[in-house]
Amino acid sequence: MPVEATCVREGCVRPLRLAFAADSHAVRQALAATLAHPVLAQADLTFAGQVEIVLAEVLNNIVEHGYANGSGTIRLVGRRHRGGVLFRITDLGRPFPGGTLPEGQPPDPGSDGNPPEGGFGWFLIRRLSCALRYRRGQGRNRLLVLLCPEQSEN
Amino acid sequence: MDVNSERVGDALIVRIGDERIDAAVAIHFKDAMREAARTPSRRVVLDLSGVGFLDSSGLGAVVGVMKELGPGRPLELAGLTPTVDRVFRLTRMDSVFTIHADASAAVAATAGQDVRRDAG
Image (cartoon, rainbow over all chains, first blue to last red; front, top):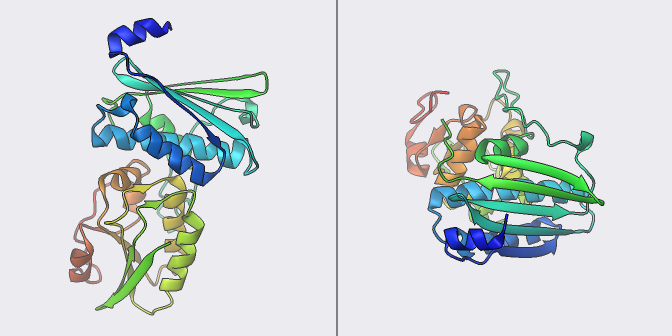
């Protein structure tokens, strides 16, 4: 999409651009910088929370699986798009198994007193985002995540 | 991880001082809870009123603490802030815990009297 078109429609808010180390503390700082950035200036607390949950899951997934807790860099770009915010996250870590994003099955609390301790991440990402697109190329993972404030949870 | 705990009636109230329970601190959270839970009590109430954010790692850690305490010593939650509450609800883990509006409501509740438990 041409940058100019976004600029006219969305009031020329400069995009968010961050590059940071793939570790959970840098992810925290990146989330704080994202929430404080003008692309989210009009976000209410509910939408801000939605953005924070989704990005935390995507970014920590890269730390733990893409780079398998080794060293690496994550790039995060965000801009306003169609009333929401479109994020592009790139990394040079491992591809997703099978070349596709995890399904993110709904967690099953169970009735046997043995609820799951994991498997929540991709469920939350899918539940709280309105579009996802993944592409692997030239040794790089590129994930597009569109977040929409009106995303219904019921 | 900043944790302080207090025995009130049959409950051990454990208050988390950190604003986030996320991937960066989930292991420390579990360690701190394990340490706090050495004080005997019939139930443990985790006061999350100071926690504004919890991710899937934090959620997994809370579930893990519940399992470690075992069925004879329930882990109950109190004071869920909006984003934390949302994570519990979306993942349906709100159905696994007795959830109180705040710590004083948790203290007022006794065994078998759930103050608030969302139908799930």
